Amino acid sequence: MKLWGGRFTKETDDKVFAFNESLSFDQRFWKQDIEGSIGHTHGLVRAGILTEEEGDSIIKGLERIYDKFEDGSIDLSGGYEDIHSFIEAKLTEDIGEAGKKLHTGRSRNDQVALDMRMYVRDEIDDIDRELYKIIAVLVIIFEKNMDTYMPGFTHMQKAQPITLAHHIGAYIEMFIRDRGRMADIRRRMNFCPLGSGALAGTTYPIEREYTAELLEFYGPTLNSIDGVSDRDYIIELLSACSTIMMHLSRFAEEVITWNSNEYQFIELDDAYSTGSSIMPQKKNPDIAELVRGKTGRVYGELMAFLTTMKGLPLAYNKDMQEDKEGTFDAIDTTKTCLSLFTEMMRSAKFNKERMLESAKGGFINATDAADYLVGKGVAFRDAHGIVGELVLKAIELGVSLDALPLEEYKKISPVFDEDIFEAIDIETCVNRRKTIGAPGKEALEFELEQYKRYVNSL
Ligand code: ARG
Image (cartoon, rainbow, N blue to C red; front, side, top):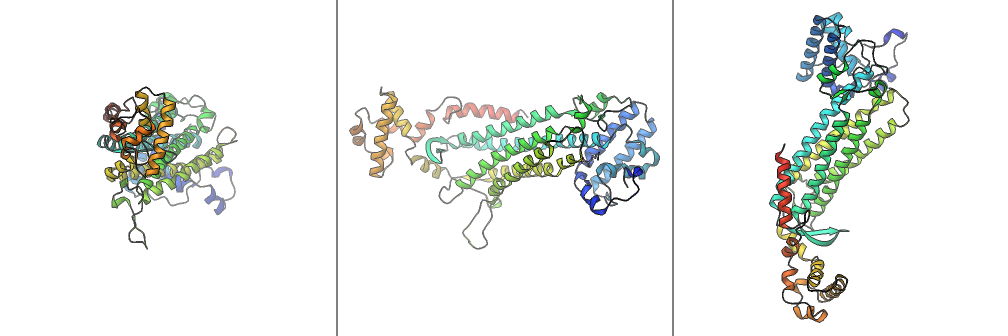
């Protein structure tokens, strides 16, 4: 069963075996292990280390194992240490002697480095697809809500009026950057460690450029020590996943607030809400809360693995087996959260009237009243003071700025005229903001065009 029994005279203690084994979790990359082994076999045949027939028999055997994994008929029992020894043993059981030649010129150190890299590469592509989907859904919401007016907040206080499209656009930007990070990590990590051996390469004349190309890498890694001990790309992925979760968590927090009885800006679909066991009136935003909550564990995986790698001498050390479970968990969590959040947003309904109503309160158009005065020749600092007094007056009378009578305006500054009401109308306030990146219709149309091009270019 073991790959390394020769030097040992005693069986491994059961607890030690259980502590040491990784098959229970590295079976997850059976596919990459088999694909990597097929690539390696081609390399061995090309180098003349295996005959064509041996190569053929190994590849056919590996493909049979692949099919068994795929149809679920593979039996993992038998006390194997890891996915590498399991597959090699099954191959030898199936094809005999030739199976024992597969591991020529290879170590589990470069094998696991290869498997993990190919696995992470596939997952990066998956996460990227999920990011694309959420962007596509947000662009639809953006397009439908270019004249849905709402308050924009700073310090959670109503600040200036914006549109829902503008607010959603901020998240589109975040997820576009997240996709950029995925592409960036993929580009940097896409070099093949196969051929690095245990740490010092191999004496067999294997053409590493050839196997690298077969396995769809840009080329081989250039240092065999680094080849087996580099896990930077995992740390980068965990960091990028943490950033995605941070974005989702901020978004979740807003959805939770918007869904509250006080706000009622959004109504989540029944399929994405849950009830209470005691309070019949409740409809809780559990999905958003769980997304917010799960952010913690993804951050945790990043910190855990950074700590594992800290202080590891070159080259391979068994500590590095700890690169797997946390990474798998972080990847699964990020993908599930992205996909559920996307569907939750796709099915959510926005309460446009409530948002507009809310935008009208809170003296959200005070800046525009000041700008009005500036337009009539008042210096901004003076205008700021005048509008401050106006707000005080409005609070005293218990009205919003647009309900304050013109005489009150004129009492504070004679510059005010009837046209002030047009100037502080919410729609006017928003749509006068038309510089690139602003909430006004004109700016949004420009952005929408870019976002549509972005979504359609895939
Ligand atoms: N299960 C091991 C890991 O994940 C495979 C590599 C084992 N190499 C070794 N020299 N023991 O890291």
